[in-house]
Image (cartoon, rainbow, N blue to C red; front, side):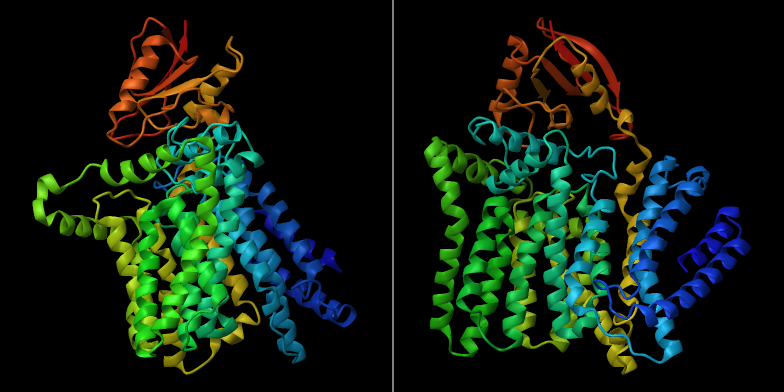
Length: 614
């Protein structure tokens, strides 16, 4: 029976014309309905969440074969000036990813709907398989959106590689801040140590961690939306992922903000869930709030403003209910929870003799040594910083900002005042703590994606109330989740800024050219210095470990960085030196090769220079 699906496949292989495509679609539907009627009478028991697993598996294989045979020689993006023409194998992979999702979920649900319409049967809900759907959604989204995934040739953002190099160093007995310098939190560095255990010479491990992080973010966001919309909120999960992970602030993946998204969403879920029931959290929930806030403390403490706003909202609720004593007890449980991730970190650094370095670098230097704008704006510096921070959100997280604002106004009108205070205070206080210092990197506003779920909830809630129909519930039980995921996959494929990097192969990146030169060079177990610039990724892909504390440059006006790196150049303390644009003059090094970059930077095409010790 399944071989009936080969007929429309032959039409598609015959050519890309509209007539053959229309005939193929018609035959696909006809064959699917016919097979579904047969299988429903002979195999009434569902396998996993699929009512028709054989059809779904067959269409998955057929779509994959189709795009391997048809699209590998078809210039899909040749006419679009905004996107380069992609290599054939990446076109096949991108298209097959989207259609595989539809084949797994969409075809099964589409056939289910058609069969139900013909037979008059009602299709049940697959709500118990919601985590499976969310997990597949997270895996697909991170594979397409993050440049840490094997779908991309290389992630050329410097921050992931800098953290990854330190993470690898930890595995070899080096202590962060004292032996190898970094500004990021120790828990974030340990996360990259975990990634290095999975893959020592690539960011594959970080991609897997990103999938887990994305899953929990979407899972807790869904739990919040479900309290308002019911299980019909499931189709909104891929849309939320589309909004958050196509934002410019997502950058190339693997940022502290990305890993803190599920932590903050969990806290938002606890607050929303309890305030919806007009009660304070339970003891276990207070402790878990402490644990998650402790994790944020040791990853990137500037986002702790969210938890301060969370406590303010809970205090205002407790005051109206005359439950201040219960609130203060809860804060005590939060403090206990904070100590769960804090104590192991403090003991680790104290035992290794690096406690002073931890506090000096992670807290003192990050707080007091970043450039300030107060000298320019005087007493108006903070106001100028906050205004610039708002512009930062507009530019780099436009869709997140719009969704968040819609959600806030909706909460004010259609949720109780305690929930509005929760959303309002967490957003405002976190915004103040992130931007008051005057730093405005593109990835900062990604963390506000935690509030985008309220915008989606607002839109659906308004539509349902205006139309006076539960259309979302009906479609969720049939095929809306599949359509939503399929559309979101293609939306991400078209909107995500990282997609332009699909045009590049590994050989196009100067980092891989440098790796080839190092591996074919005369030195065994070489060391590398990234001179006056952040880690460019050669340490990662070549599997190198640093032998210098300042193994690369950092965005910090610390004189020790220049002094120690210049001394290293003059003494020849590393086997190789890699520079970005700059050249060096030292009797200890000679130029191996100039490696031109494959992109423009500040209107020019920069060059990497690889030097070897004489």
